[in-house]
Length: 174
Image 1 (cartoon, rainbow, N blue to C red):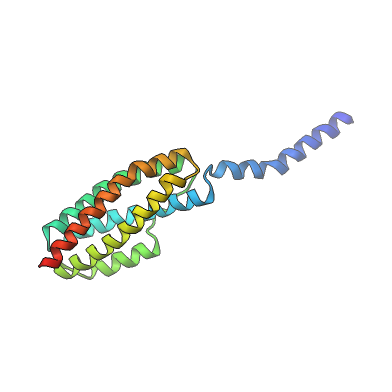
Image 2 (cartoon, rainbow, N blue to C red):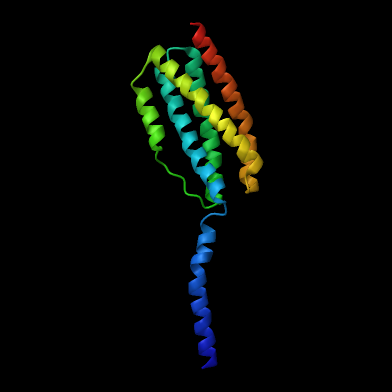
């Protein structure tokens, strides 16, 4: 009887503890690191989608080239982030965020110089926010792999910001 009681107690303990262990297995990231991962993935996908749109709709060669660079660079970063997220048991959405879909729909209605102006304005604003977020995460992330990825990706985003500001200056002169 004692063995049955001990066994029953261990089974009960295992059943009560299982959800706590399962919760830990879901993600090894803190909530702020997880939020960064999901926002970076959504933003990166938006850059790829809008980069493709820029290659089709832009009037200015520099805007088209920047769009190509966005699709390439953010596509690569997205693949790396997806692998990192999977290793941390973070599920990423395969659908664009509402904000990204609104921006894509808005820009899809434009073409030529009007597209160029709005796309460039959005890319400057978006990359200013991205650089700040990646700089913060590269210094403050709790997860060392995420911290390293953010630090590795930051110089590319800073380069994108520098490039799009140059394009913005070229458009202003026209």
